[in-house]
Image (cartoon, rainbow, N blue to C red):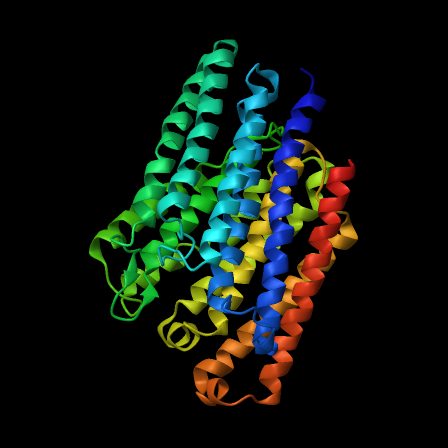
Length: 409
């Protein structure tokens, strides 16, 4: 099959991803309106029941499916006789997510943020993961013999790693297991934040190297060496433990600061497709903002004031609506050759996210300073919530435009 067929297969997963982005944004807008107008609540369907749907649709729908698109490209699924099974895997994934949404809306959840899978919904999602893995395994068995030996072995190792994902989901979703947090304060540890971010750094490093871009400069040994050092720091500080008052946990977070510079320098070594330009700039901008603000926010006095406030919501939107959305859109453009949206809609999205993040950060700072923010309803608080809702409306309209444009292509 030709390259167009490969792009067609990618488009199917992108359409699934964008549909979940639109629905997730729709629920997000409704949640922001509930904060302004509580009377909009639909019976027993409270904010607490809608919130996990919003979070999970964004993570498992919009964020995860572009990674599936990437795997379709890596394993050349469209060139295989098993390509039709890819659609079945996509619908199994979306079906499990839809089943999960109804379950969470009914009040059934594991109680763990981003890991709300429980009972039947858990096994439905695990089944979707197994089906998707079986597609990749079948394609690898069929087409692997046509690839170079190194590529076959590396893709086989990736398959083994992917086989552990369903097991990890079952384990992580269990209420019996807790995430790595500082139990004395309820906040995250520096090592846990470093470890989770290193996974993202790894994806950012391999993206240009796997999407077939020509190397413009020589490989940097320092970048990969520092990447290894960061992993050593993670395992060491994770074993020691501690709180955000301990210098080694602060030092673990500080290891992220150089990556605000190292990543742009690394990406400059490659010749990128023109369709990736705008999202690439957005991703790098959000990346720098995310890293620097994250390290600053981990400092004791600042973290103690911002955690459990709108400041945490600001950081979540910075990470998901800002950086993650930009990275996913960049990934899609690199794989499919077609950008998500034009320059105007892209910058409109990012402007709305930036305003929302700054307003929520300001609100969180005020909230952490005085309890009157929670007791009374000062004018500035209502104005902040109104701006948040307006930004959400812009993001919903832009994402809907992206979805319509994509299904017309």
